Image 1 (cartoon, rainbow, N blue to C red):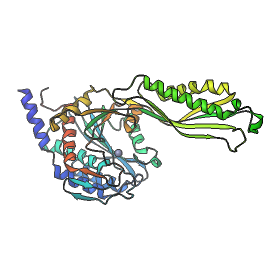
Image 2 (cartoon, rainbow, N blue to C red):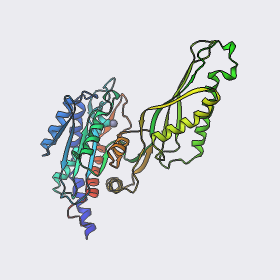
Image 3 (cartoon, helix red, strand yellow):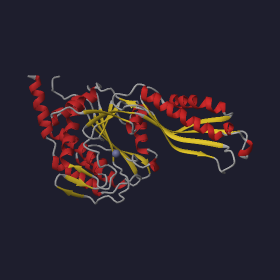
Length: 402
Ligand SMILES: [Zn+2]
Protein backbone atom coordinates (compact mmCIF):
# COMPACT_ATOMS: atom_id res chain seq x y z
CA UNK A 1 0.00 0.00 0.00
CA UNK A 2 2.75 2.40 1.00
CA UNK A 3 4.84 1.27 -1.97
CA UNK A 4 1.93 2.03 -4.27
CA UNK A 5 1.47 5.46 -2.74
CA UNK A 6 5.16 6.18 -3.22
CA UNK A 7 5.03 4.96 -6.83
CA UNK A 8 2.10 7.32 -7.44
CA UNK A 9 3.88 10.27 -5.84
CA UNK A 10 7.05 9.62 -7.78
CA UNK A 11 5.16 9.30 -11.06
CA UNK A 12 3.31 12.55 -10.37
CA UNK A 13 6.56 14.32 -9.53
CA UNK A 14 8.28 13.01 -12.64
CA UNK A 15 5.36 14.14 -14.76
CA UNK A 16 5.40 17.58 -13.16
CA UNK A 17 8.76 18.24 -14.85
CA UNK A 18 8.16 20.39 -17.91
CA UNK A 19 10.77 19.57 -20.55
CA UNK A 20 9.79 22.44 -22.84
CA UNK A 21 10.03 24.98 -20.03
CA UNK A 22 13.53 23.68 -19.22
CA UNK A 23 14.57 23.79 -22.89
CA UNK A 24 13.50 27.43 -23.17
CA UNK A 25 15.23 28.29 -19.90
CA UNK A 26 18.45 26.63 -21.04
CA UNK A 27 18.21 28.48 -24.37
CA UNK A 28 17.75 31.82 -22.59
CA UNK A 29 20.71 31.16 -20.28
CA UNK A 30 23.03 30.17 -23.14
CA UNK A 31 22.06 33.32 -25.04
CA UNK A 32 23.54 35.44 -22.26
CA UNK A 33 27.34 35.32 -22.51
CA UNK A 34 28.91 34.65 -19.11
CA UNK A 35 32.62 33.94 -19.36
CA UNK A 36 34.24 33.76 -15.93
CA UNK A 37 34.37 37.21 -14.26
CA UNK A 38 31.60 38.43 -16.58
CA UNK A 39 28.69 36.64 -14.99
CA UNK A 40 26.72 39.68 -13.75
CA UNK A 41 24.02 39.60 -16.43
CA UNK A 42 23.38 35.86 -16.32
CA UNK A 43 23.20 36.08 -12.51
CA UNK A 44 20.58 38.81 -12.74
CA UNK A 45 18.54 36.71 -15.14
CA UNK A 46 18.86 33.52 -13.09
CA UNK A 47 17.93 35.33 -9.86
CA UNK A 48 14.86 36.79 -11.56
CA UNK A 49 13.75 33.30 -12.59
CA UNK A 50 14.06 32.08 -9.02
CA UNK A 51 11.99 35.02 -7.81
CA UNK A 52 9.41 34.24 -10.49
CA UNK A 53 9.19 30.70 -9.12
CA UNK A 54 8.46 32.13 -5.71
CA UNK A 55 11.88 31.85 -4.07
CA UNK A 56 13.68 34.37 -1.92
CA UNK A 57 17.14 34.75 -3.40
CA UNK A 58 20.20 35.32 -1.26
CA UNK A 59 22.62 37.25 -3.49
CA UNK A 60 26.07 36.67 -2.12
CA UNK A 61 28.58 39.11 -3.52
CA UNK A 62 31.79 37.37 -4.56
CA UNK A 63 33.43 40.39 -6.13
CA UNK A 64 31.95 43.65 -7.35
CA UNK A 65 28.85 42.90 -9.41
CA UNK A 66 29.37 39.13 -9.27
CA UNK A 67 27.13 36.99 -7.10
CA UNK A 68 26.61 33.44 -5.94
CA UNK A 69 22.85 32.86 -5.79
CA UNK A 70 21.28 30.79 -3.06
CA UNK A 71 17.66 29.70 -2.76
CA UNK A 72 15.93 27.33 -0.36
CA UNK A 73 12.83 25.22 -0.70
CA UNK A 74 12.02 24.84 2.99
CA UNK A 75 11.29 21.38 4.30
CA UNK A 76 9.25 20.54 7.38
CA UNK A 77 12.43 20.42 9.41
CA UNK A 78 12.53 16.70 10.09
CA UNK A 79 14.69 15.37 7.26
CA UNK A 80 18.19 15.71 5.83
CA UNK A 81 18.83 18.63 3.51
CA UNK A 82 20.33 18.59 0.04
CA UNK A 83 22.07 21.28 -1.99
CA UNK A 84 21.95 21.26 -5.77
CA UNK A 85 24.99 23.08 -7.07
CA UNK A 86 26.39 24.26 -10.37
CA UNK A 87 28.20 27.15 -12.01
CA UNK A 88 26.80 29.87 -14.24
CA UNK A 89 30.11 30.94 -15.78
CA UNK A 90 31.62 29.42 -18.91
CA UNK A 91 34.96 29.40 -20.63
CA UNK A 92 35.23 32.20 -23.25
CA UNK A 93 32.91 31.79 -26.25
CA UNK A 94 35.94 31.67 -28.56
CA UNK A 95 35.16 29.82 -31.79
CA UNK A 96 32.12 28.05 -30.38
CA UNK A 97 29.06 27.53 -32.59
CA UNK A 98 26.43 30.24 -32.00
CA UNK A 99 23.52 29.55 -29.71
CA UNK A 100 20.68 27.81 -31.55
CA UNK A 101 18.06 25.19 -30.89
CA UNK A 102 17.66 22.39 -33.42
CA UNK A 103 15.58 19.29 -32.82
CA UNK A 104 16.68 17.72 -29.55
CA UNK A 105 19.82 19.83 -29.40
CA UNK A 106 20.71 23.18 -27.91
CA UNK A 107 24.02 24.47 -29.23
CA UNK A 108 26.30 27.14 -27.87
CA UNK A 109 28.94 27.90 -25.27
CA UNK A 110 27.79 26.76 -21.85
CA UNK A 111 24.98 24.55 -23.15
CA UNK A 112 26.44 21.36 -21.71
CA UNK A 113 28.91 23.01 -19.29
CA UNK A 114 26.65 23.74 -17.54
CA UNK A 115 23.71 26.06 -18.16
CA UNK A 116 21.64 23.10 -19.35
CA UNK A 117 22.01 21.48 -15.95
CA UNK A 118 21.27 24.80 -14.21
CA UNK A 119 18.02 25.05 -16.19
CA UNK A 120 17.28 21.44 -15.20
CA UNK A 121 17.76 22.33 -11.52
CA UNK A 122 15.32 25.23 -11.88
CA UNK A 123 12.97 22.80 -13.64
CA UNK A 124 13.25 20.39 -10.71
CA UNK A 125 12.41 23.10 -8.15
CA UNK A 126 9.51 24.20 -10.31
CA UNK A 127 8.20 20.61 -10.51
CA UNK A 128 8.40 20.13 -6.75
CA UNK A 129 6.29 23.25 -6.32
CA UNK A 130 3.88 22.31 -9.11
CA UNK A 131 3.36 18.80 -7.71
CA UNK A 132 2.47 20.38 -4.39
CA UNK A 133 4.63 17.98 -2.42
CA UNK A 134 6.52 19.02 0.66
CA UNK A 135 9.89 17.64 1.59
CA UNK A 136 10.93 16.74 5.11
CA UNK A 137 14.34 18.38 4.78
CA UNK A 138 15.36 21.58 2.99
CA UNK A 139 16.34 21.57 -0.66
CA UNK A 140 18.88 24.27 -1.54
CA UNK A 141 20.05 25.57 -4.87
CA UNK A 142 23.48 27.19 -5.03
CA UNK A 143 24.30 28.71 -8.42
CA UNK A 144 27.85 29.96 -8.37
CA UNK A 145 30.30 32.09 -10.37
CA UNK A 146 34.06 31.88 -10.83
CA UNK A 147 34.35 28.17 -11.55
CA UNK A 148 35.99 27.90 -14.94
CA UNK A 149 38.91 30.20 -15.50
CA UNK A 150 41.96 30.24 -13.23
CA UNK A 151 41.91 34.07 -13.21
CA UNK A 152 38.99 33.93 -10.80
CA UNK A 153 40.99 31.81 -8.36
CA UNK A 154 37.90 29.65 -7.72
CA UNK A 155 36.38 32.61 -5.88
CA UNK A 156 32.76 31.46 -6.35
CA UNK A 157 33.31 27.89 -5.09
CA UNK A 158 35.43 29.19 -2.18
CA UNK A 159 32.76 31.74 -1.25
CA UNK A 160 30.28 28.85 -1.15
CA UNK A 161 32.67 26.94 1.13
CA UNK A 162 32.78 29.96 3.44
CA UNK A 163 28.99 30.21 3.38
CA UNK A 164 28.63 26.55 4.31
CA UNK A 165 31.00 27.06 7.19
CA UNK A 166 29.15 30.12 8.47
CA UNK A 167 25.74 28.50 8.02
CA UNK A 168 24.55 30.98 5.40
CA UNK A 169 23.85 27.95 3.20
CA UNK A 170 22.68 24.64 4.63
CA UNK A 171 22.74 21.20 3.09
CA UNK A 172 23.97 17.91 4.50
CA UNK A 173 25.04 16.84 1.01
CA UNK A 174 26.03 18.67 -2.17
CA UNK A 175 24.98 17.28 -5.52
CA UNK A 176 26.91 18.97 -8.35
CA UNK A 177 25.04 18.74 -11.66
CA UNK A 178 28.03 17.89 -13.84
CA UNK A 179 28.80 14.69 -15.67
CA UNK A 180 26.86 12.29 -17.77
CA UNK A 181 24.29 10.03 -16.15
CA UNK A 182 26.95 8.69 -13.85
CA UNK A 183 27.51 8.98 -10.15
CA UNK A 184 30.94 10.51 -9.94
CA UNK A 185 31.77 9.96 -6.29
CA UNK A 186 35.53 10.16 -6.13
CA UNK A 187 38.39 12.26 -7.48
CA UNK A 188 42.06 11.80 -6.94
CA UNK A 189 44.06 14.64 -5.46
CA UNK A 190 46.44 16.53 -7.70
CA UNK A 191 49.47 18.71 -7.23
CA UNK A 192 52.13 20.35 -9.32
CA UNK A 193 55.52 19.66 -7.81
CA UNK A 194 59.06 20.89 -8.35
CA UNK A 195 62.21 19.14 -7.25
CA UNK A 196 65.26 21.38 -7.21
CA UNK A 197 68.83 20.19 -6.88
CA UNK A 198 71.33 22.98 -6.25
CA UNK A 199 75.12 22.70 -6.33
CA UNK A 200 77.18 24.68 -3.83
CA UNK A 201 80.08 24.46 -6.22
CA UNK A 202 78.61 26.94 -8.70
CA UNK A 203 79.05 26.70 -12.46
CA UNK A 204 82.41 25.14 -13.28
CA UNK A 205 84.12 24.26 -16.56
CA UNK A 206 83.07 20.66 -17.19
CA UNK A 207 86.68 19.70 -17.92
CA UNK A 208 87.46 20.09 -14.20
CA UNK A 209 84.47 18.08 -12.97
CA UNK A 210 84.41 14.30 -13.39
CA UNK A 211 81.13 13.37 -15.03
CA UNK A 212 80.01 11.31 -12.05
CA UNK A 213 80.05 14.53 -10.03
CA UNK A 214 78.13 16.60 -12.57
CA UNK A 215 74.74 17.62 -11.06
CA UNK A 216 73.07 16.82 -14.36
CA UNK A 217 73.91 13.13 -14.00
CA UNK A 218 71.94 13.11 -10.73
CA UNK A 219 68.97 14.46 -12.63
CA UNK A 220 69.24 11.25 -14.67
CA UNK A 221 69.23 9.22 -11.45
CA UNK A 222 66.25 11.15 -10.21
CA UNK A 223 64.27 10.49 -13.40
CA UNK A 224 65.09 6.78 -13.09
CA UNK A 225 63.91 6.89 -9.47
CA UNK A 226 60.66 8.54 -10.56
CA UNK A 227 60.22 5.81 -13.17
CA UNK A 228 60.62 3.22 -10.41
CA UNK A 229 58.13 5.14 -8.24
CA UNK A 230 55.53 4.89 -10.99
CA UNK A 231 56.25 1.16 -11.24
CA UNK A 232 55.69 0.89 -7.50
CA UNK A 233 52.39 2.75 -7.89
CA UNK A 234 51.38 0.45 -10.75
CA UNK A 235 52.14 -2.59 -8.61
CA UNK A 236 50.36 -1.13 -5.56
CA UNK A 237 46.69 -0.91 -4.76
CA UNK A 238 44.65 0.39 -7.64
CA UNK A 239 41.55 2.43 -6.75
CA UNK A 240 38.50 0.43 -7.89
CA UNK A 241 36.97 3.50 -9.56
CA UNK A 242 39.93 5.63 -10.64
CA UNK A 243 42.71 3.11 -11.27
CA UNK A 244 46.35 3.56 -10.35
CA UNK A 245 47.99 6.73 -9.12
CA UNK A 246 50.22 8.68 -11.44
CA UNK A 247 53.38 10.71 -11.37
CA UNK A 248 54.23 12.66 -14.52
CA UNK A 249 57.02 14.98 -15.54
CA UNK A 250 56.48 17.98 -17.80
CA UNK A 251 59.67 20.03 -17.49
CA UNK A 252 63.34 19.32 -16.97
CA UNK A 253 65.53 22.39 -16.65
CA UNK A 254 69.25 22.40 -16.02
CA UNK A 255 72.31 24.23 -17.18
CA UNK A 256 73.00 27.35 -19.22
CA UNK A 257 76.11 26.54 -21.24
CA UNK A 258 77.44 23.51 -23.11
CA UNK A 259 80.63 23.05 -21.11
CA UNK A 260 79.67 24.42 -17.73
CA UNK A 261 78.14 22.40 -14.91
CA UNK A 262 74.64 23.57 -13.97
CA UNK A 263 74.13 25.32 -10.67
CA UNK A 264 70.51 24.34 -10.39
CA UNK A 265 68.47 21.51 -11.87
CA UNK A 266 64.70 21.50 -11.66
CA UNK A 267 62.09 18.88 -12.44
CA UNK A 268 58.44 19.95 -12.63
CA UNK A 269 55.52 17.58 -12.90
CA UNK A 270 52.22 16.42 -11.46
CA UNK A 271 51.08 13.73 -9.08
CA UNK A 272 47.56 12.35 -8.95
CA UNK A 273 46.91 10.25 -5.88
CA UNK A 274 44.04 8.49 -4.18
CA UNK A 275 42.28 9.01 -0.84
CA UNK A 276 45.02 7.03 0.98
CA UNK A 277 47.02 10.22 1.67
CA UNK A 278 46.88 13.99 1.87
CA UNK A 279 49.01 16.40 -0.17
CA UNK A 280 51.60 16.92 2.59
CA UNK A 281 52.14 13.16 2.84
CA UNK A 282 52.60 12.81 -0.90
CA UNK A 283 55.06 15.70 -0.83
CA UNK A 284 56.99 13.90 1.93
CA UNK A 285 57.14 10.79 -0.29
CA UNK A 286 58.68 12.86 -3.08
CA UNK A 287 61.20 14.35 -0.68
CA UNK A 288 62.10 10.88 0.56
CA UNK A 289 62.54 9.62 -2.97
CA UNK A 290 64.87 12.47 -3.97
CA UNK A 291 66.86 12.80 -0.73
CA UNK A 292 69.37 9.93 -1.25
CA UNK A 293 70.10 11.17 -4.76
CA UNK A 294 70.69 14.74 -3.59
CA UNK A 295 72.94 13.43 -0.84
CA UNK A 296 74.98 11.30 -3.22
CA UNK A 297 75.56 14.34 -5.40
CA UNK A 298 76.21 16.71 -2.48
CA UNK A 299 73.35 18.81 -3.77
CA UNK A 300 70.92 20.89 -1.77
CA UNK A 301 67.37 19.58 -2.17
CA UNK A 302 64.17 21.54 -2.26
CA UNK A 303 60.84 19.87 -2.96
CA UNK A 304 57.73 22.00 -3.18
CA UNK A 305 54.16 21.82 -4.39
CA UNK A 306 51.57 24.24 -5.66
CA UNK A 307 47.98 24.12 -6.99
CA UNK A 308 47.48 21.15 -4.68
CA UNK A 309 43.96 19.81 -4.25
CA UNK A 310 43.13 17.05 -1.80
CA UNK A 311 41.32 13.90 -3.01
CA UNK A 312 37.73 13.21 -2.06
CA UNK A 313 35.60 10.11 -1.88
CA UNK A 314 31.94 9.88 -0.97
CA UNK A 315 30.92 6.28 -0.26
CA UNK A 316 28.78 4.58 -2.91
CA UNK A 317 26.31 3.66 -0.16
CA UNK A 318 25.97 7.21 1.14
CA UNK A 319 22.21 7.91 1.50
CA UNK A 320 22.34 10.83 -0.95
CA UNK A 321 24.24 8.78 -3.54
CA UNK A 322 21.70 5.98 -3.11
CA UNK A 323 18.87 8.51 -3.50
CA UNK A 324 20.21 9.68 -6.86
CA UNK A 325 20.82 6.08 -7.94
CA UNK A 326 17.22 5.23 -7.06
CA UNK A 327 15.91 8.30 -8.91
CA UNK A 328 18.07 7.46 -11.93
CA UNK A 329 16.66 3.94 -12.02
CA UNK A 330 13.11 5.27 -11.82
CA UNK A 331 13.69 7.63 -14.76
CA UNK A 332 16.00 5.54 -16.96
CA UNK A 333 15.11 1.99 -15.96
CA UNK A 334 18.77 1.03 -15.45
CA UNK A 335 21.48 1.56 -12.88
CA UNK A 336 23.69 4.66 -12.94
CA UNK A 337 27.37 3.98 -13.46
CA UNK A 338 29.64 4.69 -10.47
CA UNK A 339 32.70 6.68 -11.45
CA UNK A 340 35.96 7.92 -9.96
CA UNK A 341 38.38 10.15 -11.83
CA UNK A 342 41.92 11.39 -11.86
CA UNK A 343 40.70 14.93 -12.48
CA UNK A 344 39.73 17.28 -9.69
CA UNK A 345 36.67 19.50 -9.46
CA UNK A 346 34.75 21.58 -6.96
CA UNK A 347 33.78 18.51 -4.93
CA UNK A 348 37.42 18.26 -3.81
CA UNK A 349 36.99 21.72 -2.27
CA UNK A 350 33.52 21.20 -0.82
CA UNK A 351 34.44 17.91 0.87
CA UNK A 352 37.85 18.96 2.18
CA UNK A 353 37.21 22.61 3.06
CA UNK A 354 33.51 22.71 3.95
CA UNK A 355 33.31 19.14 5.25
CA UNK A 356 30.14 18.40 3.27
CA UNK A 357 30.00 15.03 1.46
CA UNK A 358 29.61 15.83 -2.23
CA UNK A 359 29.35 14.06 -5.57
CA UNK A 360 28.37 14.69 -9.18
CA UNK A 361 25.49 13.62 -11.36
CA UNK A 362 24.47 15.57 -14.43
CA UNK A 363 22.80 15.39 -17.83
CA UNK A 364 25.87 15.54 -20.04
CA UNK A 365 29.40 16.74 -20.41
CA UNK A 366 30.80 15.14 -23.57
CA UNK A 367 31.14 18.34 -25.62
CA UNK A 368 32.25 20.57 -22.75
CA UNK A 369 34.89 23.14 -23.75
CA UNK A 370 34.67 22.10 -27.43
CA UNK A 371 33.78 24.47 -30.26
CA UNK A 372 30.80 22.30 -31.09
CA UNK A 373 29.24 22.45 -27.65
CA UNK A 374 25.67 21.17 -27.42
CA UNK A 375 23.33 19.45 -25.04
CA UNK A 376 20.41 17.09 -25.51
CA UNK A 377 17.17 18.70 -24.36
CA UNK A 378 15.69 15.30 -23.61
CA UNK A 379 18.57 14.64 -21.24
CA UNK A 380 17.94 17.95 -19.47
CA UNK A 381 14.36 16.92 -18.83
CA UNK A 382 15.50 13.54 -17.49
CA UNK A 383 18.13 15.21 -15.30
CA UNK A 384 15.46 17.48 -13.83
CA UNK A 385 13.33 14.41 -13.09
CA UNK A 386 16.28 12.75 -11.38
CA UNK A 387 17.07 15.90 -9.36
CA UNK A 388 13.47 16.24 -8.17
CA UNK A 389 13.09 12.55 -7.32
CA UNK A 390 16.51 12.40 -5.64
CA UNK A 391 15.46 15.32 -3.43
CA UNK A 392 12.26 13.43 -2.59
CA UNK A 393 14.19 10.25 -1.80
CA UNK A 394 16.93 11.91 0.25
CA UNK A 395 15.11 14.75 2.02
CA UNK A 396 12.02 12.61 2.50
CA UNK A 397 8.64 13.12 0.95
CA UNK A 398 5.90 14.19 3.30
CA UNK A 399 3.32 11.44 3.38
CA UNK A 400 5.42 8.90 1.53
CA UNK A 401 5.17 6.78 4.64
CA UNK A 402 8.64 5.29 4.47
ZN1 LIG B 1 31.57 22.80 -15.62
